[in-house]
Amino acid sequence: MIAIKPIRTVAALTCGALAAGGLATGSVSLLQPRDAAASSHREAPLISGMPQYDNTDVYAFVSPDKADTTTLIANWTPFEEPAGGPNFYPFADDAQHDIHIDNDGDAQGDLIYRWTFKNKFQNGNTFLYNTNQVTSLDDPDLNFRETYDIDLLKLDKQKIVSKTKIANDIPTAPSNVGRASMPNYKTLRDQAVKKLPGGNTAFAGQADDPFFLDLRVFDLLYGGDLSEVGNDTVKGYNVNSVALQVPTKVLRQSEKQPIIGVWSTTQKKNAQGDFVQVSRLGSPLVDEVVIPVKDKDKFNASSPWNDAQFAKYVTDPELSRLIEKIYKIPAPATPRKDLVSAFLTGVDGLNKPPNVRPAEELRLNTSIPPTDQPKRLGVLDGDKAGFPNGRRLTDDVVDIELQVVEGELLGQKNDLGDAVDVNDRDFGKSFPYLALPESGSRGPLAGKARGSSDKSGSSLLNGGSGKSSGSGSDSGSDNAVLIASGAAAGAGALLVGTGLMWWRIHRRRSLGL
Image (cartoon, rainbow, N blue to C red; front, side):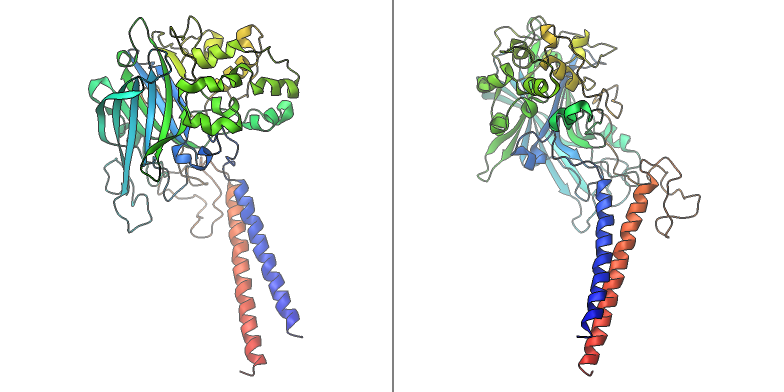
């Protein structure tokens, strides 16, 4: 019995040290990017578990620097943590990534641009995504390679009548591993922009998530008292993007009928080898805050032709009733014909095609020229080249949709918004216009040139504090927590070893050895 007390004492010390290590490790997790559990990018129960196949956003706009073309952009894989190695973020290679064009307003696709991807590792005998610095897309040190094809499908009454390959085996831009691995990522991005026959230009690869918004709308509409606005939920995250710049004459029916409807889908191969639609997206936030939970998966699997089944959620929207309940702002009277115009048919005199069949599509009037001074509120602020006439990267769709839901088109003026008005990174002025992806480089040394030294003489490899003296994006406090975690874990390991050694010695003595 005398031996038990010391053993318990050592065990208690060991557990205490391990607990301290656990708490410190837990503190580190608080410094990581925010939990993505409630997100417009994870809008339905089924697709939230399959991020590779999840459409996050669709954009369609007349190209600002090439006005005889239209740019189409679709994004996949929400909330890509930039440092998320070793596999990072390939496109799904068992899926069809489609952008649909309806050029006569009948809710049926007339054209489909389809991306399919292939990927492989050059060398399977390493855990590395790249084996040294990568300076070009064909660099032998880029271990992971991904290419894509684009097919143009023409349809009649929802049946394919022709198929033309417009891109073959084009390399994607890789995930932005970090500055040490990819010292000039823009070079890789530029190399991934390819001019194709027929006046098309294509890009596929990683990009900074262009959506800017505060998604705390899911916490009782911004905390129940508007205390939770102004925080860009997707700041710091990337997405996988495809972009295609197409001569506008190819997309529209004619000069007299220049309005197109655009949406994107993902078809995933099932166990039988058949492709099944699992994701769909046209206008932003429709499946997220218009369609109720019970019908979200159904919406993702459906086509615009069948959207009459969802019309009641547009004409009597839950969101305006919630705003009235929580903030006492009177909801406009139902049925909401104004929302039918905004979300289902297009607006008269702007982007409503003749003989339109109501359907959820992103509608763009390609005859409206781009503006040199785009306004973030688009049509609401007199800028007819912006949302809901198509969607540009700079359009503040959350503010626009909130104001429309509260009756802006009915003359009920309001200034509702989420207090996030611009993206955290600047968009480009030429195709593909998307901002470069966030780098996987993190920590106090990330802002320094590769090979530079800390003037204090310390480094993370010789026990230095690692406090930032440069322009790194993270503060020294992150490092302090990591060091505290490592120290606590080390102390725990030391005490475990001491305890085991003590127990073995005591055991040998008690057995007379």
